[in-house]
Every structure is written in C-alpha cells, then in structure tokens.
Length: 443
Image (cartoon, rainbow, N blue to C red; front, top):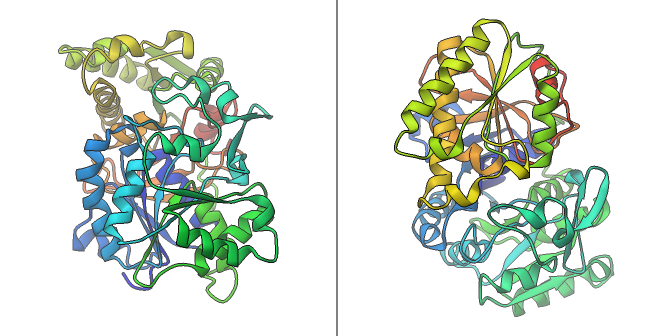
C-alpha cells in the first residue's frame, strides 16, 4: 500500500468500525483487518488509503498491552501512513487495570520515538464534547458530564467517576500532560500555544466542542505531524477533524456513496450488552417479528459452555427456520447484569464474547444468513474473532446511529464471505435499531 493517509488500531471492534465509517463518509477508502494480514490479503485492498487493525485492548490489562500493543504499533508504523491513530471510545472509559489509555499512550510513544502525543476525544458527530478538559456526552437527547452520565458512570467494567480527562489519565500514567483549551484553540496564538505544549508535555489534550473547533484541532494535528508516521490518540473525532483539513489540497476524493442494502428476510442478533439502550431495543424487537432467547451468561463461561451453546443454537435455528428473526441475549438491562458472578472466573468476559461468536457463526452458516448483528462493545471484539472474518469494509453508514455502520465481512470461509455485519456499542441506536437493520432502512 502506498500513500496511506492514516493507519489505526481500534481498542475494540465497535470503535474500529466507527473510524472506518467516518473515513468512508469522507471519501477515504478504508479496510479494517481483524489481525495482521498477509501479503495476499493486503493486496486485495491495495486501493485503500486508510488501514485499521481491530483490537481488544479496551478490555485488557496493562501487562497484555505491553506485549500485544507494541507488536501492533510496530506493524502499523511500518506502513508509514502520515498519521497512526490509537482509537479509544469517545466516552473515554478506562481504568488503571482495564483498558488503560495511559499505558497505551506510553507504549505508542515508545514505538514511535515521539516526545509528545496529541489527544482528541470530542466528536460532535457522536454528541461527545470536551470543554476545558472535561468530557460531556449525550444520552436520550440530554447532555451530561461524563461522571454523571446515566450509563457511563455505572459502566459494569470501567465506570467513569471523573470528567476531567487529564485527571483521569493521571491515574493511569505518570506522563506529563497539557491542555489546548477552547479559548486558546480559537485565539490567534493557537499554533504558538500548541507548539509550546508539545515541547513541554508528553500528552496534549485538544478541546473540541463544535464542528468549528474540530476543524481547528485537525489543522494542528496535521500541521505538527512528523515524517514517517505520527502517533495520535483519541476517538473518531481524530478522523472527523482530519477530514476537515484534508478537504483542501490533500483531499482523498469525493464523499462516499452507499446504495441501500434492502431488507433481509431473517437476521440473527447476539447481545452481551447490559445497557438500558440495548434493553429497550431488544424489547422493541420482540414486538416486531423477533424471537428473544435468553442465554445464561454464567453457564456460557462455565465448563459446560458447549452445552449452553448447543441449546441456544438449536433454539435459534428453530426460530429462523420458522421464518422469524432472533435475538440471543445474556441480559435485559442493568438489573439483569450478572457481572459479579461472571468475574469469579479469570477471563470469563472474553469467554462470554467468544461463546456468543461461536453461536452466531453456527446460525449464520447453518441458516445461510445474509445479515447479522453483534451488540456490546467488548462483546463484539471477542465474538467476531470466532466467526472466521479476515477483514471488514463499510456497506452502509447508519446516519441515526453514527459509529455503527453496516459492514461487509471478507473471509476465506464461503458462508461468511460477504456476510453483512452490524456491530453496536451498548449506548448506540434508537429503540428500533434491530428492526431497522433487518429492514435495511438504517436506524
């Protein structure tokens, strides 16, 4: 691949497709690989100007990052894209022991031999905003400081109890930090201030609270990049900011065009999400032609997991053979969260995702499905890894649910190659999300 504008590592799968959607909407052909590709697979996507690598670091330990992220960043650096992006969730949920963004920055900074790493989290397209270092996010058309957010303040693995992102980072790294705040970003001295911060700090957070400040952030990131690849960290706000800058002389092309995919007669959904948003979506779908099948998450991670998968597969096949779509879920909302029981077994959350992926693969192959959905950010990463998918490209963005496009799977397995896959985080989508994707209408 030549003339790559951007390479990236997604800390989970839904975040990885979020970046891909943003780039494709901006006319940048993009491929997302599930693992480091061989030369033959790379050659199939030689036309792409952005390359992603889907990861699981959002749910991993710092020790895991030391090994796996170093290898991933080293490969991405070898691609010599102008920018290399470590993509994190726009809600910034992380902790010193799980999904540590601080440790990821330390690893990337060392691989790229870079003194200072720019950080952008605000993404107005996703209703995420940073103002004077504090993060705000929407929920059901209301806006909350992230530590008061009805969902993220109660996240089952990494609850956000601090809205000041640099304070939050200070719990994960001893690297020095700086802030290019909104007032300075919009002042005539913006570039001078950015240069000083880059010289004095190891991490610089750039505020974004609007499309206008996003464009200014993009200018600074592009202006200050170093030859041979520049390492940056943040949400898909990085891509939206850079697309604004690329709209000039470096424009990669016209905006993407995506013909509607049409309706699917039946789809299968697996969900490991405990979010109230997903709960509403499941309940709505069960009034609109879907069968709901509860899967015991504790049994799914036990030594009897094969029996749980077999029973759920049989139930799912029965619904699909009857011409109905099906949702197989491990929880209906926060009240049904059994995380305390699951976490008694080390690595159980990963095993849960893999079990749901094994289940979905069986249904897709046996029923020759054309479209499937995986719900849950952490779930998606581990579930799709069980399905034999080598790479994803965008089939259609979902305007009402930015960050969760309908994708096309590329695989050496005939029944999986060409499968349409939607991956959604717990908070994403309206109540009719599952029905809308089945019907090919977007959300």
